[in-house]
Amino acid sequence: MKNSHRLCEDLDAEINVPTHFRCPISLDLMKDPVTLCTGITYDRENIERWIEAGNETCPFTKQVLETFDLIPNHILRRMIQDWCVQNRSLGVERIPTPRIPVSQCEVSEVCSRIVGATRRGDGKKCGELVRKIKNWGKESERNKRCIMENGTACILSASFESFARDSFEKHINLLVEILSVLSWMSPLGKEGRSKLGTESSLRCIIWLLRNGDLSGRQSAVLVLKEILHSDERRIITNTLRAIEGVVEALFFLIKEPISPTATKASLMAIYCMISSTTKNDMITSRFLEMGLVGVIVEAIVEADESVCEKALGVLDEICNTEKGKEAACNNALIMAVLVRKVLRVSEWATELSVSILWKLCDEESVRIEAIQVGTFKKLLVILQVGCGESTKEKVKELLKLLNVYNNRVDCCVDSSMGFKYLKKPF
Image (cartoon, rainbow, N blue to C red):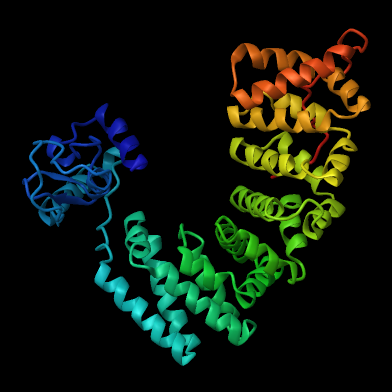
């Protein structure tokens, strides 16, 4: 749709695009015109978004819709295509003939066949059917929504668990295909998470997280994040304790990123794991032994807003443990990095940074370092700008603690430094 919008802007200066070729909602050249029961034609993507938002009237006529059926306007679509061809010399590209959207009936039929193939242990047939669903999803967001609304996630999760339990090495290609589809299905549903949260399923997911190709590893971490991001995460984390390599696999996705999407999913998975365990849990201890604090601090330096917030969330949770606070205090850059992120990323990032600073400023040496990197001034600015009550209380406590050192310690480090010598996260 963005491309068609730019196309219309470019064309307006040179030729007149017929009004009836434009969608009444976006005013863009229509790519897939469909007609409502009111007789008004819209681009499919725009009118579907309008209806899904809960609107029950025709955007143009304001009439209440008796039916939400969308009838493809083949005649108008061919006219638009002919017009594009006639104006090819002006840089107009012919719109492709849209594929017919998948129907609920088609999705249900394929899901039923997947259930049958799974019961028979027919991995080959199951793989063919999963690829069919995958290809449908690639065609449009509308197809993805139709697939998800038909309970496909639960059926694929059950199939994954069945073939993983049988022999995941034997069915590895099928399992990778299933994960690649599940990776864009959210939420997976309680029953789906239950199937994927079994020991056999988790062992397969972790194996792919460690040994899969880039695409396989990304799919695995996205699904693992969805499994953990639920009320059952404590049970899932207990199961993961018995699986070798889970900590290492998630750690290296932060240390050696393969994509921002995988990095964010890894951080969320780590957060769910350490926040659902006891303060001296072996999983948290293992993350600390591997150097997670240093890797996260480095990742925060030039991360985008979303990654930065999730990384700070993990760091804040780590600092709830004595070992975590010790590891953070021993990091030479953490104070400067935290202060630099205050009021520069988002309100949430500022609150997390303050929370971490508040947890670390028990030791006198940490307070002195905090003064040196300009923490006192930044905290005063936070009070002036405004923040939540919980953050405000932490800021006031920090100011009281740091005020003792404010006039005795020179501010010798500029917290706005570029940290150019650090390895970029991605």
